Image (cartoon, rainbow, N blue to C red; front, top):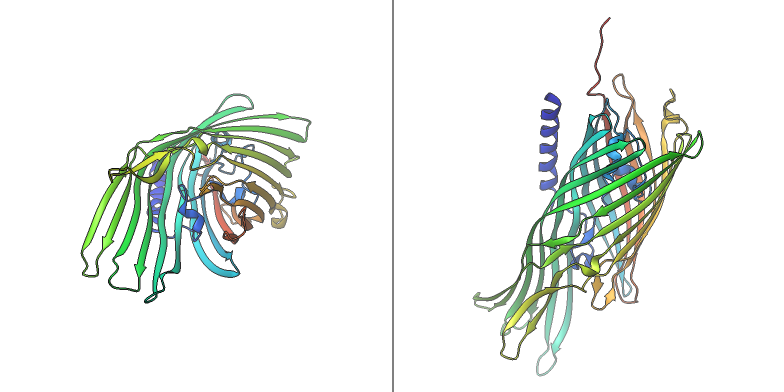
Length: 438
């Protein structure tokens, strides 16, 4: 019981930390204006160093929530705790201009342990999407008899978070199944503000806001088998349940007079959101407990997911805020990653360092007008440094360096480059070991 109390206290503090930093969500991208915002990759520190590859990864000393079937492999003597954060520098380019922006964000907080032979458990919390941008543009709307300029500011903030509880079970030797059941919540806010340098023209402001609350369920399966004495293959499958979200989107159209009087029209789109069906498949080859190579493929069927649509006006002057499908597009992602450790059981510290590298490619899930958003190309390098002391030689400090390029399809759109340092602590303590005095 004391371990459960310690775990509850640890996660309560972690939840408070994540909530306090929710506003610093790691996004300055104008593309977070669309859909739910920028999607989080959902991986731990070891995944990030290997291009996000995960579906076939299965070890007793690491938490892999991207495939919950892996929880059944958690070491019977261990309590696992993972914490990760990212520091990034973003470079945004368009029409010969360049802007830099820095962010620091918490990536995930998770814990796991074995409940019974061949049955493992994990719980944690992480961001699902992030929104954060502020863009202004100025243009003349009248030149005679006097020049009048209009300044339009687009801004947004918020995002979605998930707290989850998952189980992994190995019902028969080498075959495991599992699931993560999560609670999804967050606020999404977008504002369009029009200001004029003539006091006789009223300022206008359009606000798009929603408060989302729903569930999220993901399933996983893994099957491992030996190709030879030193060669092992693991196949992984995942499925994320798609469903409608019974929450409304609200549109506020405000007219602000120079006297300070505000007139507001409010429109509501009922049951305006949905999550997509998601399918994943991966394979990992492991050689002699030294080398791991994995490849993953993910398909997210966003084109059938509902989102709030346009404001429509009928001939009688009534306006409607509606939802529908077609504003998003299906997303496809490929991940490749590898890890090499000279000897994970060696007495010499440097021979237990894990070296990692990876690459990923993803198509967008959002549309900008009628065109698809930018594609993502990402490369990563990293390592895991063992923490060795008199009590613990199994915990790791994970460090990875990522480069990501968001490449738009057409000229004139904003291109983005990100340089990231990802840090993670994988705490692996022998909480459940029984000591025997002789």
